[in-house]
Length: 229
Length: 229
Image 1 (cartoon, rainbow over the protein chains, first blue to last red):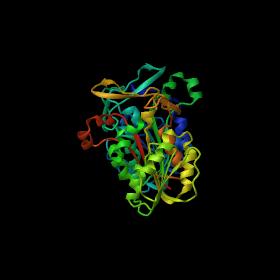
Image 2 (image 1 turned 90 degrees about the horizontal axis):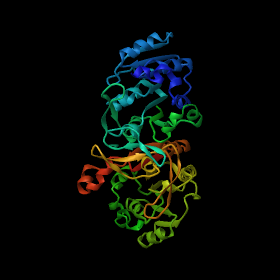
Image 3 (image 1 turned 120 degrees about the horizontal axis):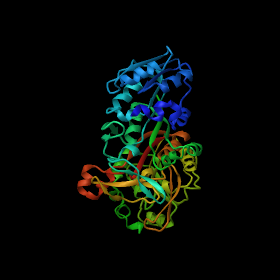
Image 4 (image 1 turned 135 degrees about the vertical axis):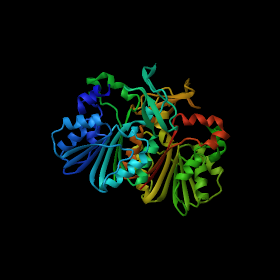
């Protein structure tokens, strides 16, 4: 199941996109951080080790929060069960917001962006990753047979936003497809300045070490966004 | 050939994305405008009719500039032959920069963005369209046979930027694929604020009038960007 994924077992070392994310992070020294969709708490602990004053880790999964608590020995990290669809946060209580691979499970992204904007101090950064819209769009996403020596990823229904169900690990996991434009405009419209966009692609060194990563050059699987309030 | 395309014959009325572009345009009243890759001059004339004080229309094609001049009776529009790869513009000479479906032919986008930024006054807007990176990425771009009732667009080589040759009208037309991230970061890095992103999709009314447009819901063909200096 999901908890056996390399990124769950090995944490950040099992997530090939982590070096790219780390390069986008602001200096978090003495910052109050919120980690939205913290899972087992890998990023929450990383951010504390990087100097954050405190981290609030939020996740809808009771199991994940229990495991995060069990794996963490740090009084400055507070893990709480929370549904990001209905989340309320105190105004101006955080200096940095982080989220990894969570927002594509959220139906009402506009509401969440408004909540995050209100919870951040002026000038605060907001860095998040999601499954890339190109990866999510198709009704039946999977590699197509090689052509011209390249694996090919199918795109359809790109402009048709809304529910996508995949049988990835659990049957019928529900995700929400939004276009790149919708995602970025939600941030701009709420008053965030976009600072950097990345579409994760493995480095040559990563591919040398893990050849199966080469297919990630063919299609963008993950979108990384850095914005500033 | 290319000059027989609906958008060349009928101008803006033959370009289904035009209403979306028009909705992104700032008020150009009394603005000095540069139109990069003006072609037959359709947008240059539109912008003058919308109130621009002057328009400088630039295109690398001698034939297009000749036709633009022949079709224009307006002393405030100046058409010139210019290669955008080596373009130089006077500093702060323009209040609005526009470009339609041109930049994907440009090898050195960073240089051009720097030139445009320098030529604009502070606060000036910059609106452009390009072929969407998802549309351009694949080595052999074409619709794949229907699956699940949807036409499917193949994506591969997305992270491999650089030359793409297609036999569209002329044999071996040379284009340059850049990822969405590279395109947007070039603007942000040069000091532009991103104001709005659109990925053209036809409206229901447009599809009712022209059913073949429905396939544009399946994959993004065109990227529209509004930025501000």
